[in-house]
Amino acid sequence: MTRFAFHEITPKLFQAQLAVATALGAAPLIEPVLRDLIECRVSQINGCAYCLRMHSDSFAKHGGDPIKLTMLPVWQSADGFSAAERAALVWAECLTRAECQVTISKCHRMLLDHFEEAEISELTCIIATMNAWNRLGIAQHEFA
Image (cartoon, rainbow, N blue to C red; front, side, top):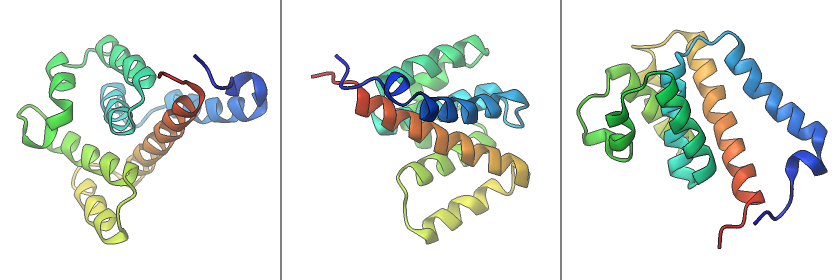
Protein backbone atom coordinates (compact mmCIF):
# COMPACT_ATOMS: atom_id res chain seq x y z
CA MET A 1 0.00 0.00 0.00
CA THR A 2 1.23 3.50 -0.80
CA ARG A 3 0.76 6.50 1.46
CA PHE A 4 1.46 8.96 -1.36
CA ALA A 5 3.13 8.98 -4.78
CA PHE A 6 6.12 11.33 -4.55
CA HIS A 7 6.80 11.20 -8.30
CA GLU A 8 3.18 12.15 -9.14
CA ILE A 9 2.47 14.72 -6.44
CA THR A 10 5.76 16.62 -6.72
CA PRO A 11 7.22 15.65 -10.11
CA LYS A 12 9.78 18.49 -10.16
CA LEU A 13 11.23 17.34 -6.84
CA PHE A 14 11.26 13.74 -8.04
CA GLN A 15 13.06 14.77 -11.25
CA ALA A 16 15.64 16.73 -9.23
CA GLN A 17 16.30 13.71 -7.00
CA LEU A 18 16.52 11.48 -10.07
CA ALA A 19 18.91 13.94 -11.76
CA VAL A 20 21.39 13.59 -8.88
CA ALA A 21 21.25 9.79 -9.10
CA THR A 22 21.64 9.95 -12.88
CA ALA A 23 24.62 12.31 -12.61
CA LEU A 24 26.33 9.89 -10.21
CA GLY A 25 26.05 7.14 -12.79
CA ALA A 26 27.06 9.23 -15.82
CA ALA A 27 30.85 9.15 -15.39
CA PRO A 28 31.49 7.28 -12.16
CA LEU A 29 34.75 7.43 -10.28
CA ILE A 30 33.47 4.74 -7.91
CA GLU A 31 33.14 1.31 -9.51
CA PRO A 32 29.52 0.16 -9.95
CA VAL A 33 30.04 -2.94 -7.76
CA LEU A 34 31.30 -0.81 -4.86
CA ARG A 35 28.49 1.68 -5.37
CA ASP A 36 25.93 -1.15 -5.27
CA LEU A 37 27.54 -2.59 -2.14
CA ILE A 38 27.36 0.78 -0.39
CA GLU A 39 23.78 1.36 -1.51
CA CYS A 40 22.83 -2.09 -0.18
CA ARG A 41 24.43 -1.40 3.20
CA VAL A 42 22.79 2.00 3.55
CA SER A 43 19.43 0.45 2.63
CA GLN A 44 19.96 -2.32 5.20
CA ILE A 45 20.66 0.23 7.93
CA ASN A 46 17.60 2.28 6.96
CA GLY A 47 15.35 -0.76 6.58
CA CYS A 48 14.33 0.01 3.00
CA ALA A 49 13.43 -3.34 1.45
CA TYR A 50 12.61 -1.86 -1.97
CA CYS A 51 16.00 -0.20 -2.40
CA LEU A 52 17.86 -3.19 -0.93
CA ARG A 53 16.25 -5.48 -3.51
CA MET A 54 16.95 -3.10 -6.39
CA HIS A 55 20.61 -2.59 -5.49
CA SER A 56 21.16 -6.28 -4.68
CA ASP A 57 19.98 -7.06 -8.21
CA SER A 58 22.29 -4.37 -9.60
CA PHE A 59 25.21 -5.75 -7.57
CA ALA A 60 24.65 -9.19 -9.13
CA LYS A 61 24.27 -7.67 -12.61
CA HIS A 62 27.62 -5.89 -12.20
CA GLY A 63 29.32 -9.16 -11.24
CA GLY A 64 29.45 -8.68 -7.47
CA ASP A 65 30.28 -11.66 -5.29
CA PRO A 66 26.99 -12.96 -3.82
CA ILE A 67 28.81 -14.00 -0.64
CA LYS A 68 29.55 -10.33 0.04
CA LEU A 69 25.83 -9.54 0.06
CA THR A 70 25.21 -12.43 2.41
CA MET A 71 27.95 -11.23 4.75
CA LEU A 72 27.17 -7.52 4.42
CA PRO A 73 25.28 -7.21 7.74
CA VAL A 74 28.37 -8.56 9.54
CA TRP A 75 31.06 -7.23 7.23
CA GLN A 76 33.20 -5.94 10.13
CA SER A 77 33.95 -9.51 11.23
CA ALA A 78 33.73 -11.20 7.83
CA ASP A 79 36.52 -12.16 5.46
CA GLY A 80 36.47 -11.21 1.80
CA PHE A 81 36.12 -7.44 1.96
CA SER A 82 39.05 -5.38 0.69
CA ALA A 83 40.55 -2.57 2.75
CA ALA A 84 39.01 -0.03 0.36
CA GLU A 85 35.57 -1.65 0.68
CA ARG A 86 35.90 -1.63 4.45
CA ALA A 87 36.83 2.06 4.47
CA ALA A 88 33.86 2.86 2.21
CA LEU A 89 31.50 0.80 4.39
CA VAL A 90 32.74 2.56 7.53
CA TRP A 91 32.09 5.90 5.83
CA ALA A 92 28.61 4.81 4.69
CA GLU A 93 27.65 3.63 8.16
CA CYS A 94 29.10 6.71 9.84
CA LEU A 95 27.24 9.16 7.59
CA THR A 96 24.01 7.16 7.57
CA ARG A 97 23.92 7.04 11.33
CA ALA A 98 25.10 10.70 11.48
CA GLU A 99 27.53 10.07 14.29
CA CYS A 100 29.51 12.75 16.07
CA GLN A 101 32.01 14.89 14.19
CA VAL A 102 34.99 13.20 15.89
CA THR A 103 33.80 9.83 14.63
CA ILE A 104 33.16 11.21 11.16
CA SER A 105 36.70 12.65 11.07
CA LYS A 106 38.15 9.27 12.04
CA CYS A 107 36.10 7.54 9.35
CA HIS A 108 37.21 10.10 6.77
CA ARG A 109 40.88 9.51 7.58
CA MET A 110 40.38 5.81 6.79
CA LEU A 111 39.23 6.73 3.29
CA LEU A 112 42.35 8.74 2.50
CA ASP A 113 44.49 5.60 2.13
CA HIS A 114 42.21 4.21 -0.59
CA PHE A 115 40.42 7.02 -2.39
CA GLU A 116 41.25 10.34 -4.05
CA GLU A 117 39.43 13.50 -2.97
CA ALA A 118 37.03 13.39 -5.96
CA GLU A 119 36.23 9.73 -5.22
CA ILE A 120 35.49 10.58 -1.58
CA SER A 121 33.21 13.37 -2.74
CA GLU A 122 31.39 11.01 -5.10
CA LEU A 123 31.15 8.30 -2.45
CA THR A 124 29.67 10.85 -0.05
CA CYS A 125 27.08 11.87 -2.65
CA ILE A 126 26.22 8.20 -3.27
CA ILE A 127 25.61 7.74 0.46
CA ALA A 128 23.59 10.96 0.79
CA THR A 129 21.50 10.16 -2.27
CA MET A 130 20.81 6.61 -1.12
CA ASN A 131 19.75 7.88 2.29
CA ALA A 132 17.35 10.32 0.59
CA TRP A 133 15.87 7.59 -1.64
CA ASN A 134 15.49 5.30 1.39
CA ARG A 135 13.66 7.94 3.36
CA LEU A 136 11.40 8.78 0.41
CA GLY A 137 10.66 5.09 -0.12
CA ILE A 138 9.97 4.46 3.56
CA ALA A 139 7.74 7.54 3.79
CA GLN A 140 5.69 6.53 0.74
CA HIS A 141 5.15 2.82 1.34
CA GLU A 142 3.07 1.41 4.12
CA PHE A 143 3.96 -2.24 4.67
CA ALA A 144 1.94 -3.04 7.81
